[in-house]
Image (cartoon, rainbow, N blue to C red):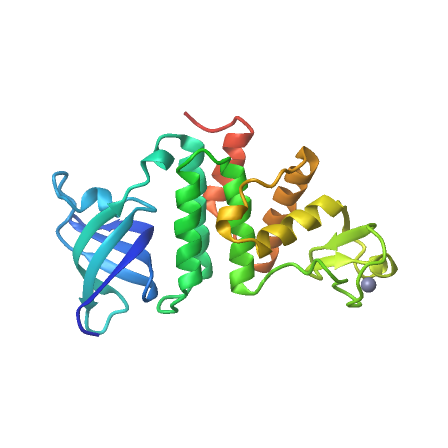
Length: 255
Ligand SMILES: [Zn+2]
């Protein structure tokens, strides 16, 4: 690969030895790439803040022979997201977005929709929107882009449209069950019509239209639990940042 230039978000940063840093970056033009940057750890170095988690950078890099890491030769900070870094909950949610994206993507698979999703979500999170709201939007859009959306409009077992609003949600079957199919998963739980509507709405609406949807408190909590367990089960993830968010929200975060 010749020398390349693109822009991307820092998904992961690992300091190696004295002066080198290994980075995972989600780029607009190449999907996720792994990079090594050498000689950058001195405090006065101009790269340092550009290497912070979820910073957006313009990067120049080239291939390193026999390794799956590329060599970073230039890195310029484009957006630091100061609005996110001002509060711990927002930092935690932004960390969750990049950790989740890092987990579900493989190097070298370009996907501009994922890049735009992260860009839009971080921009929204750096403003006044509720972090929980942004997180639910991020999760739903991510599942949709990856082709893992729960089945909501028809029964996940028989395929028919449920005749009434009495439905249950089956984690194992990956969607709602109509009344006739409750027996196909004994562990399926009742689900509110508002929850199903909210998730379907968010999936179909463009990003700039989705922050204003009103949500009842019960629906908000159910959406949060349903998406959390769905992502854990179907994407097989267990993330440090998600555990940390749960702790903060129980008021148990360490000082
Ligand atoms: Zn059915």
